[in-house]
Amino acid sequence: MSTVRIAPSILTADFGRLAEQVRDAEAGGADLFHLDVMDGLFVPPITFGGQVVAAVRAATRQPVEVHMMVAKPAEHFEELSAAGGGRLIFHWEAIGAEDGPEGVNALIQQVRALGCEVGIAINPETPAEAILPVLASLDEVVVMLIRPGWGGQPMMPAHLEKVRTLREHIDGRRLPVMLEVDGGVKAHNALECVTAGADTLVAGSAVYNPGQTPQEAIAELRAALG
Ligand code: DX5
Ligand code: ZN
Image 1: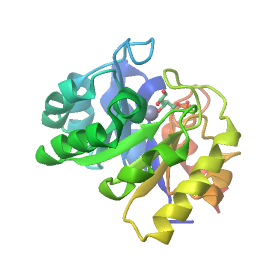
Image 2 (image 1 turned 90 degrees about the vertical axis):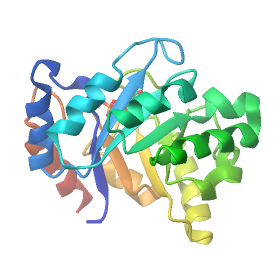
Image 3 (image 1 turned 90 degrees about the horizontal axis):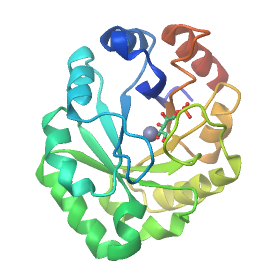
């Protein structure tokens, strides 16, 4: 399982020494960084925008993806792309529920026009089938295993069923789409996520927590994957 990518989310990092926290995770083997932008509308909390994305971009050589938990993603594509977000992930629920696959396709094109990769995240209430019409146009699908908005929540393993479904479609159609899980990933359930079909694991509080350094935490995750 050495090909599994570990994507630290900085949500529970120490923002007073953010660059150091990012460098520690990179030194520990982080494959990319997952930055959670929240607007206080799509989800209750407000986190950060382009300035923090740029700070992380400057602190690491690894890829940076932006998980946009925002109600109007298209209004933020330019800023987040300019800040260094190499892959922009927006939520199906922000667009697809109302505008359908055509609306989603328009957004996918907007992201690509900025030279970024594109991902779509689905919330716990959204079935995997919702995104099948646009699956082939994506670089990444993100299955939320928690209600979005907060780090440190326990995973809801029932939603791994969607990961299995999406893995079947991705492999069956030989699509070059990454399959990421987000929420509650820890050493004790990381292998379960990978067995279900995930190839990329977001790890927030598993990496940034008071009990371990990011290097120790990532080593523990890797060991759990065997
Ligand atoms: C929450 C975010 C997650 C969060 C994960 O809405 O999308 O990326 O940081 O944190 P953990 O890994 O602690 O569940
Ligand atoms: Zn996230």
